[in-house]
Image (tube, rainbow, N blue to C red; front, top):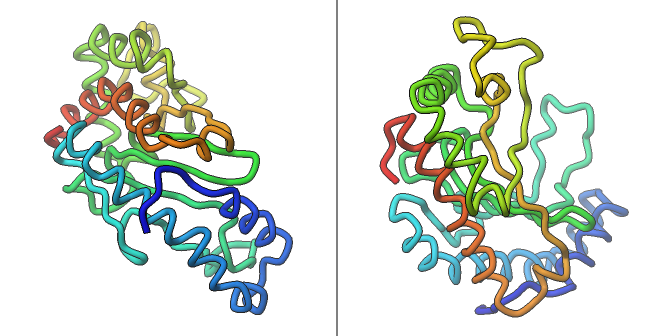
Length: 228
């Protein structure tokens, strides 16, 4: 299936799933999921892939139902208080080819009724990677500021994620970038609308956002010694 935009049916399915989040309902509506959610999402991944290769040959777009860029619709409820079995959003992750998990630099697209956004960067990096990014900011504060507080990234994205209450141990509390050194996540988020996602040519619009995020992505990749 090839498409230049998603369909309103995707959001309609997710709204219905939020209201009837159980296995019996999903089984009865599995064809809707495959036709209205899974196939359009995989088509988007396929269509986005050549754009991503031009942005960075080291990021991956894999159009597979399992193990690729499309997150599973099933939730992992083993250690969760919320035992509802299904996610009520669509998540697309475009990871670095060297990434073993979601903690490495990557791009992301989130589709959910009432909450649509593009994201990029590193979410919950492990201790060693977190220290490398912080050390890179200390070593090149102007480069960091150019990457995230100026230019196209700052116009399109806002830095988001968790931060420490106090400065991290071993870093100057008076450092001019102390607010960013306190971050536990280094992610940029650009809020979108359902109408933007449903418009023809959204894949090109998403690619432009990913291009705007190149300064952050390059800084993070350099910090953790991954090619960009």
